[in-house]
Image (cartoon, rainbow, N blue to C red):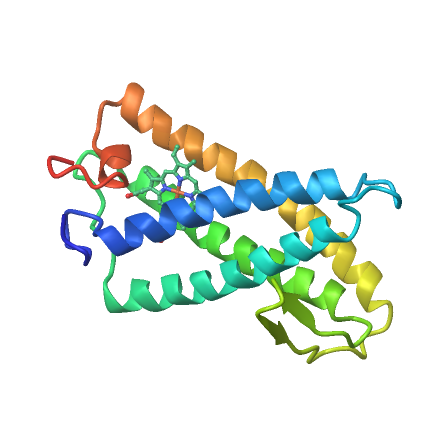
Length: 184
Ligand code: HEM
């Protein structure tokens, strides 16, 4: 498999980045949902948010790389069998997924750094608090983070369903391409 995208195929780099981000998004959502219900006396009370934030920062870096790579090596063109409406829905859906991802990560950063404390990434390095003065920053960013996270997983779920529909009902190569199948 080639590592760059071509006009007909996704290359290894885009495929690995896509599935890494997919696993991270669903994993972070599950972790976030579980950790907000933790009792103060739970041994995970501090560790779970630390892990959530650390993976979130790493995901942000991975997403920057992904956007950079998208410019450097554009993805394949739409399949010939996809009509104008499908092409439009695909483009819009992918665009909103990108925007949603950055929205969730930026709002998460604004919650964690509202009190001026940096975010420690697994104790390896710290990301400084750059924006701290917004009134009710933690509360507003918290609401935005929660609603956007829900919107993102629902949209990602619909996106996955659309991919499965292309595979099992339309029998086209949409999903196979994202697994690097040469005939896709
Ligand atoms: C949070 C989870 C997910 C996110 C954020 C996401 C995001 C994206 C984005 C932005 C693209 C556009 C291509 C690119 O820029 O790399 C894409 C393509 C694709 N995704 Fe996902 N995805 C997720 C999960 C899934 C899942 C679970 C499936 C399958 C069951 C899937 C199947 C596909 C397929 C088949 C394509 C290629 C579509 C095409 O070539 O037109 N994705 N995804």
